[in-house]
Length: 331
Ligand code: DAH
Image: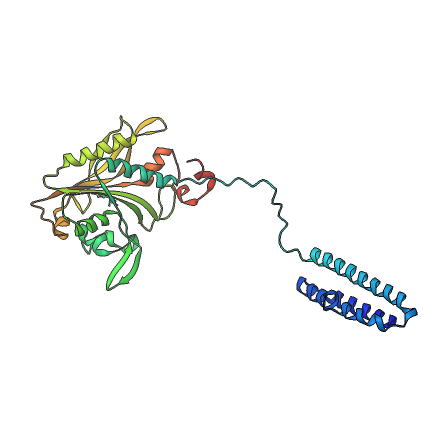
């Protein structure tokens, strides 16, 4: 039997060397050292060994068991070193502080503008960024042959249910959407993105934000428009802020004006051009089924980036969209 035990040891150790993973290791342990394993099966045979050979055979059996157990432990250590289960993590290490996020400077500017107009009774609303030509042009009194419709100045998208769609070039589209759904009196503010195929530089980008106002009721005049803009300027930029209106042209307003607001730029009060405004053109009211003899209205559109850039002294428009944390962290 002693010779047989030598053979068994050799086979067991050979099998163990061939083991190359945790699963194989466990299978080997069960086969050789388990309660129904090879080693256990040898024990009952001890009683058949001639009496004078018994002590030596017993001793050899014990040695075999110890040898296999030791070999098993060693192989297990080797395998653990070769194939670590995952990265070593010290769970007692103090954690790294996570950075605190903040609202984007443009989102904050939009919130602030909305907040001031909300206090003046303007209800906030939004419209889709993909528009049809009716809402972006036709209903706004921009005729079919108008240069503003030139493909070079628009992101046309294709046809939806027979109508050509485009990324809206102005939030004035929301005026139409609101007037189509509801009748006067109306007093709304709409903010959002608009798109124009411009080459990106310090003052141009192919996407930017506007804030649009619309007020329609009986007896609305230019005085109400100027009052609303004046109140906004004072509340938003400070008590010394002023509004200046210069004659302008927009197809959807008559008369039309360009809006300048006096705001503090690096401590100095400066006139900054912020957008356009005017009295809603009778054709626009007619296009949405509102009688211009009965109702009148004013509208305005402000550029959000302009406000934010001047307010915070940001010299380059592109910084607002680069998502460079070094820039964003300053707000
Ligand atoms: N939609 C114009 C633009 O994008 C801005 C504008 C001008 C809006 C006059 C208005 C308005 O509501 O009355 O340049």
